[in-house]
Image 1 (cartoon, rainbow, N blue to C red):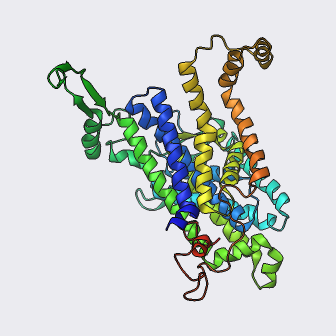
Image 2 (cartoon, rainbow, N blue to C red):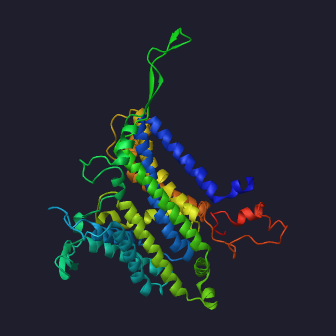
Length: 476
């Protein structure tokens, strides 16, 4: 067991994410946030960690398993999100909104996944005959075509034929659209109905909300009552531990729990796919497609199925991400989103599902949100005075031995400096660990460790067995 603890990817994931959670807890304490602010900060970090983990897992199916170079992730996300919004948004959207078709939300989610898969089929059928670099160009071009099409005024509103049952069956039409550059409203988050009786700001709490909201809003523990003293001699100051959490934070934290469950489902699904005969063919295609074809496998069909499956998961990941916002627009699906997801996959390591979760969480927490928290903590304790207007003005005081102007300039521009941090991380990984933190490119042919009974290879408690299966059952 001790050997497994030293090498198991799942254990490494738990240890690293535990340290990340402790780090952000320290940030919250340093910022002197109330408990409500602490929960809200951790919820934000976990939200982005979960959505990135899901999308990186889907990309790992393309690149880590099949070797398909897809850099159009944002486009497939957009197809899933907009399809769900058009299918499930209310018919009566108000004067300023874009009406939807009013179908149930599960139908909209399933439709979004199917449309994302069909978009993947459209890209894969003609393009998978190309080499990896040319296929990458096709996918990024398709992603931009999708985004620009969603901005089109032509599709801002349009009518579709509709089967009406009012007064008998008849063919009518309904108006819907993409909203153009201004975007489109999303259906209400059904999780909210567990806590409120409606989606409006004035909605009354439902049964669960009426129980939890008063409980957490008034959660204060009096540790030292007023008038207390030590040994009846030394008076002690009154102290109350304030653990109050506001209703919006409770609802958002519940949604993060739902996202965590979806991450687990993505993980289990892709581990099983990787260990199946289908998954082993995908890995054979990744290593040498010619050899796989020589063994009688229709590699093009396998790649098309895997690509469509991954695109459907990307559509679902986009729905779970944007669906909680209540609104989306084409600007949310720029190519930079695909770049972020690829960086997260590189950090975690292609070919490892555990590495995909780790990479998504580390990118979202440390690389993307970590610098912002560092800036808040430093500016909370250090008085910088004025911030230099440009880099030249910040460099000048360094020759006089003044460091604070440069530090103030760097902290004020931390959003831009995050891109430099991403570049430094990528260069360091390419030089020192090109396979990523938990990347696995060499794997056993069998899904279980093989060996003679009684030998070291067949001993399930031996180090060889621990090395053979270290990624939640994923063969290495």
